[in-house]
Amino acid sequence: MSVEKHNIYPDCKTTIRTVEIGGLTKSQLFGKLQQQSILMNKLGEKLFDDDKFTSSEKAYSVRTVELKVRDLGFPEGATIPQVYKKANQFGLKLCPLELGPYLRLKYLDQPEGYLGKPYWRNRSPYGAVKIASEILSEDVDFPKGFYLRRIEGVLWLRGYIADDLHVLDPDDHIIFCQNETLK
Image 1: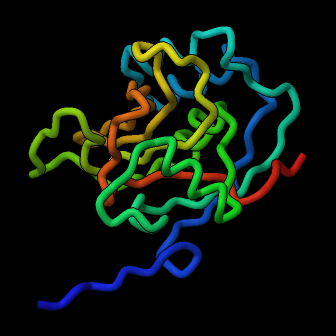
Image 2: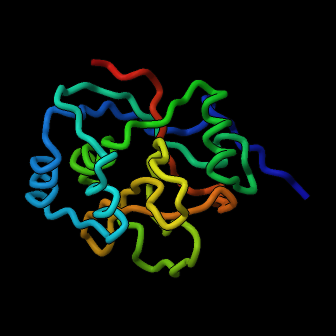
């Protein structure tokens, strides 16, 4: 029996992006999403509409890294608090919540994640990319953050709910910030 060795961050495959965020009001940002025909689910709308979700008046850039949960040393998966804690130990930071809509506007060529794949209940769908961000409310019914998805050619900015016991799959994709914001 052979055991496959998997490289851990920073020695693993990642996708690095620099994203400019801010500079638009929430209303303007929502308008840009609509212009690009980007859809939101009810949880995404709830998160976007909440007063705690703000858009910076001044534009600034963040450098992000997309990796898998297993790339942080969790070959069996881990809870969101475990993933966030380990990422912090590697020097990765939580993203500003407003990154979600701005990244969705930039990442228009996201691969299809739906076709030919089964529906999973209580786990991230195939092709979803979760954005690690500060959690605004401990209420389990309030969205914890955004994730990006392409479903049958349609781009989505979706919100998700999860409690601290929910285990992310080792192959779930997640985005962190690599640096402090570049204002």
